[in-house]
Image (cartoon, rainbow, N blue to C red; front, side, top):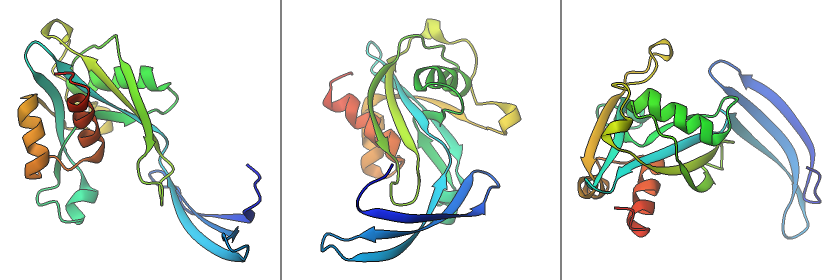
Length: 193
């Protein structure tokens, strides 16, 4: 990772409780050629994957609803978020991860997934790359109620909504999760429904 605008990188572990928070101090070369010292905290929670399940015939999507403490402390009234199904990769590849997450969270066993993009979620402070997928679902694919993994203390509500309602929920502010907005807009732009 050597380059001509970065040198003397020092790393200090600040927290290794839930995920890893490090403080990096380094010398950075500005466009002017001047070298300055900078410090940044970087949160490493691993990479993740998200998926929008959609049904063309019914004109519906499957989303989830769960409590998110960071949003609650930042002003999200009750802390609950309507989101696309998602999870951390852990040791899985993105496709295997999102199939597993879809079944755990929504109860749908999806075999065919289509990767549509990957992007950094918050590059100023978080290392995570998120892999975005879409997949068609049908009633025959429902193998459980979903709701998440009890051992991970997940308590997820599964929502099947008309796609038109999901679009309205972005405008009304009921959906404020970035990955979900991206996937819903991808579906709209690409006329998946």
